[in-house]
Structure formats: C-alpha cells, structure tokens
Image 1 (cartoon, rainbow, N blue to C red):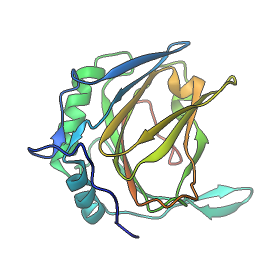
Image 2: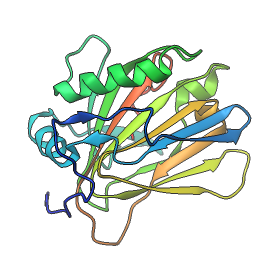
Image 3: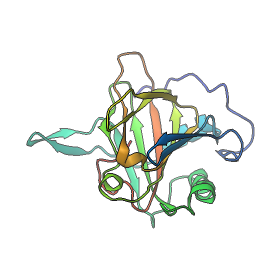
Amino acid sequence: MDRARQPSLFEGDGPVGPRPLDVGTEHEELGGGAWLELNRGWMNGADQLFDRLVDIVPWREEERVMYDHKVAVPRLVAPYAEDVDLPDASLWASRRALNERYGNGSAGPLRTVGICLYRDGRDSVAWHGDRIGRRRDVDTVVAIVSLGCRRRFLLRPRSGGPSRRFDLGDGDLLVMGGSCQRTWEHTVPKTTRPSGPRISVQFRSGGAGADAGDRY
C-alpha cells in the first residue's frame, strides 16, 4: 500500500482529537424523517491519526458470499464491539463527543465502532443501507470520520431520484440519522483516478450495523 498523500491544508495545532461539534456543523433534512450533518475537518490532527491507525489496527481481510461463491471484500476491516478497547484515545474522545450530541435521541447512544482501510481506488463498498436499520421501524445514527485521501461518498434515495455527492477526507465528519439507513443507500465507489489510502471510522448506535457487510 502506498501511503503517499497530500497533507491536509486544515491540519491544526494541538492534540489529536475531535473539535467542538457546535462549531461548523451543517444540518440538512433529507425528507421522510432522514437527516444528515456534515462537519469539515472535525478531527484535529487527522494525518497523525491516520498514520497511527494504519500501524496499530489489527486489519483483516474478509470474504462474503456472492452468487454462490466467496469473494474478497474490497477493503480491510476491523470491528470493535461495545466492550472492546478502541485502538486510540482520540476515538474514545470522539465517541464521547458524538454521544453528547446524538446519544440522547430515539436511536440511543453510539456503541460500536468499525474501521475500514481503503488501500487505493480499487477498494470500495457497494450501494447499501444499514441492514438492521432498514428492517426495523426505528431510528439509527451512523457517524463516519474520514481520514487520509478524499474519496467520493454518494447517497441516493431508495425510492429513486438523483444521488448526492460528498468528497470526504482530512478528518471530515458525516452523520446520517433518523430513517436514513432505511430510506437512503450509500456507497464509496471505485475510481480509476490515482488515489492514496483512506481510513473510515464508523460510530454506530445500538441497532445499527450488526451485519458484517455493513462496514463502510
């Protein structure tokens, strides 16, 4: 894996960790009870955290069944259950900060953490919605911190309609809430353009993302 990437222009001074969520967070209602929030450069010291996670996370390759045979999942993954120690103190701080803002709603607190490593533009995740959130008539919250090189993150309504594009990286935070996992789908598509590695850190509420395939 080539770690080469353009350093973030938004890399600030101070310790690695989340910035206040009450500054710079943009809220958008998507309709039908779905919403999202975006905070650019939320993770201070994003480049440092990227390098630390690349080295200390126990990355593993996974397979999933497709059309009666097993295929490799095109990214490396590392799931962390609620009672498992997180690999970096900044992730503990991030989950606390996220729960202060989102943890008291109907979806409940953010509990589990999944981390993915997209090694280059060939790694991806297909269109999907969180499976548990889609099957149940309950709200879920999924908060994604993107580290490293920017990649396209697309959202589209399951009922049909144009997709929304977000270029995420450099410590950006995207939060999907309400009915979003049931009524919208999302993807990180492959790209033929030169792309360095990206790490995605996902914080999920208790009812979200229990299926091994729901990692992005």
